[in-house]
Image (cartoon, rainbow, N blue to C red):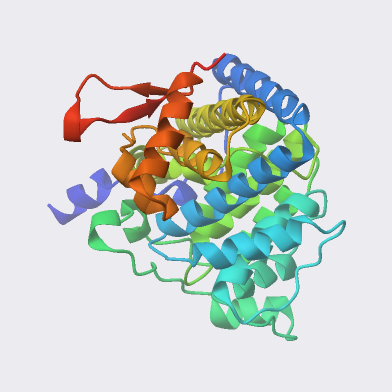
Length: 375
């Protein structure tokens, strides 16, 4: 019976003959890849038409979203305020060098910025270890990368992830010689291929997740590698969508497809299909955010021509951001530290100018909503 069970046991992908040479059906993926590439181009065109201030904010928002989402997928918590500050400073520079840090929030941010500013550079073993140290908030060691790899990372173990966010594929073993596997992977990674860089981003992400050469942070490292090739696909050190956010939004699918691929065949067409869907999800979010941001800008420009005071402009900003907010004169007075009479005058002025709409309920229930269709 034991012999039968052993025979029925599925082999892990890296145990199959032909590993690590993965295959996929390019013709089957071509329509979806074409759609993704087209939408990437359209998003780049839209962001290129933004004014500098809005463009910088859109880039910063995307960078922060990706860093935070990638950490959450691995069950880690970062200080978003510190990430925003570090990303803002880093993105303002003409050049970027990944420096040592003893802060994991700063480290995670600088790793991401490295994929944007230095996307054309080869991914070496030293660069991997610099990323790893930065993600941990530890200075990079001067010891040889190969020596550190063999002594510290030969037998990786799954990271501690909250029970409700467990990633099933982490329960599987890894190839016995992760050092040799990673060396082979890096050689493939840095070899020029005719493969579309978006597809190579998906393959790189998967291969690293299957090898898992580190004791922790393999997921973030894998998505960092995919970011390198997504930047190469755009051929520009800017990205206005977050694939990590797309994966987090579809966490169950992300987990399921990784688990299925682990004991599947060397044909990874289904993984790449899902990877492209993750990008599509990220692009949809980015397009919606951009529409929201440009709509808000146009709305506030119209408000300024209506000669509004500071209190009114402040509340218009809040109402635009909080889409379902119903505003009362009491709320207005409290938020602006003004009298009820002043609040009511401000509101009535906005109603007259058709910037606010009064809802049907009267008396103490009187409330107002933003007229988002202001012309």
